[in-house]
Length: 157
Image (cartoon, rainbow, N blue to C red; front, side, top):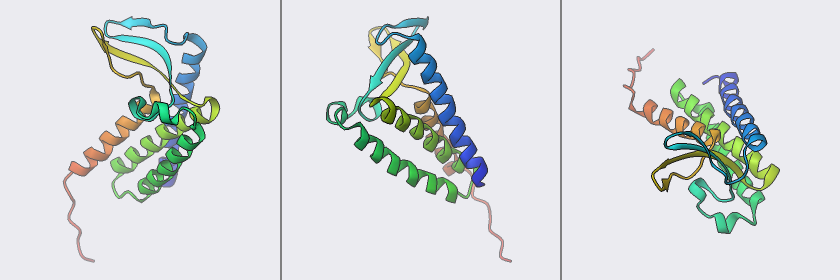
């Protein structure tokens, strides 16, 4: 994938994530659900751990460590994306890197990741998430989809 396209897609994912979080922070009260549709609320919350709140207790006191660990992983994924041979795979890595960067910015700015999308069924709630998490999910799906594509024949020169 070409570098400008890779970085542009990563920056787009980061920018959209940060804009949506700024709107959520400005318009929602923490932990007070705002019903949108049956099964979907906007609920402002903060995650000090990893995905789905894993390690929340451990990492709550070390947001800079969590940001650093995520930063190293993001750099590695960026390197992988720039080396990708298939555009869909490169786009997937760009979305993951952009989403991770959005969450890193939250940790550096406020010590926790801002979450606000709350899907539920009856009394069961999926862990709240955000735009960065959507970008990471879509990026992983794109990488998987790229892995299922038919290999092209390489002709000898």
